[in-house]
Length: 348
Figure 1 (cartoon, rainbow, N blue to C red):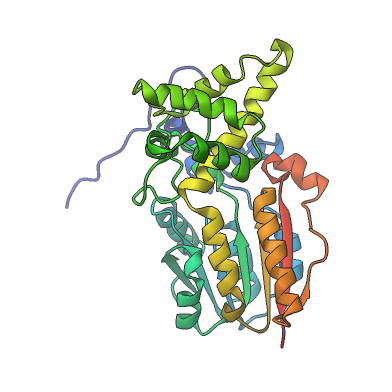
Figure 2 (cartoon, rainbow, N blue to C red):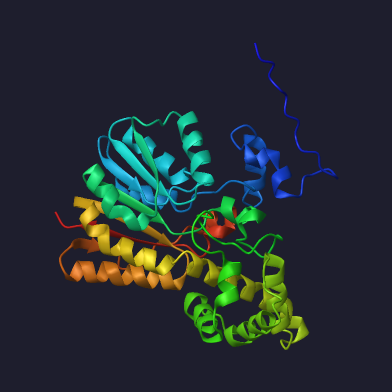
């Protein structure tokens, strides 16, 4: 019998782990539920996990019944999927999609451990723009959810490059095995393209100043390769801002520019446009869809598509106003603050 090797936990200095890979409790939240609850109660998201947003609002609208067939177009940590599966009560089937090859494996295991195996849940690693292919295989859906936010697990992992708060490679790809990273994109982009990217994807007011600094670095082959270097670029570009306002201005420009780069390298607007175009055919008559957006560009696309669908008679009803998370939810999960939910019902 082969002896089982005991794997020791990573050692860290001080009383609490600071580095992402050292945060062993947050990487296994089911095992350390009390610790996780303490972190959440303080208004923080534990590293390595994601808190689902607008769960009650989504479930209230979708009105899931046992025996139905549903789709979570953006699986992520699996929180929404799990709650929708609970509503099926073991009858019916769920499909779930994600492009992230790293997180999809963890989530599949997490849901299997919770009792949701392949008999009731089919998970596919594919972009949700391919909803037509999945719907053809499944035979259409009674309910669909798409949460367009980036999962906290991706944001918190420095290796993914989604945030300026940690030093790591400037990557920002949802699927790091495909396409080019944000760092590679910045090497080849023109000044005009970069200004347009920052303005169109995130309404960045200092787009020209930031693009100028990046172009200056490119000319000397001092390329922006890391998240820290990107933050330094923004600090340099905003050095003219009065000192008492600069820290907040840099923070907001960092958030906007990282968002703009993420949207660009993942072709997020093009993907969403494809999804919205194929969505009606993926829904069964009377089927319901809810979409969570996190910035104005996404929300505009969803609003426009639903309005056009209602006018064409594809949807019998669409949300007239956005639904937002409650004040209590925003206190518990600050990452929910920018969330907007829109919904539509397919004509019978």
